[in-house]
Figure 1 (cartoon, rainbow, N blue to C red):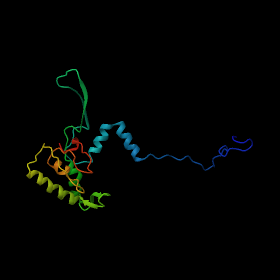
Figure 2 (figure 1 turned 180 degrees about the horizontal axis):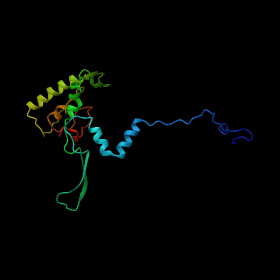
Figure 3 (figure 1 turned 135 degrees about the horizontal axis):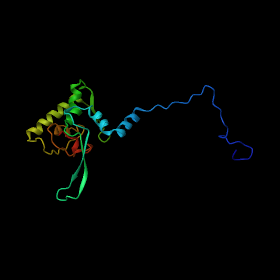
Length: 189
């Protein structure tokens, strides 16, 4: 008892279990299994994730760990990780082409909704592929080739500048409004 003498606290009563009571089994969420796999065996986890993508040349492993030594400073070394060594992948193909090839060209690839301009637009995979191929042709005609760095200012709703650049195997630093920076290691090898 607590509080005023003689008045029981509302939580002080002991409740007995009914005879039909069975403890509830807590079900694990699929996300828990995914997280456990990623932590227990990261290499097989990332190889499994990579298998969901189209690879022009499959990777030899998920991760290759080495130690590198700085040039000119023989005593300074650091760990070096190479993800998916030997693999060749096309970001553009995985983001756009394969969806059209699988018959999903009429499905929305991008939903553009600008509270600033009041513009709402859905862009299908087929429309996006057409725009990407056209713009890749423009870049090619301008002399852009594999290994070049392409910097293009692209107005929404078509944040497609990186895709044609990736299609041509170039690097692409982002300069578009509303388009996040795309790390260079996402580009096609």
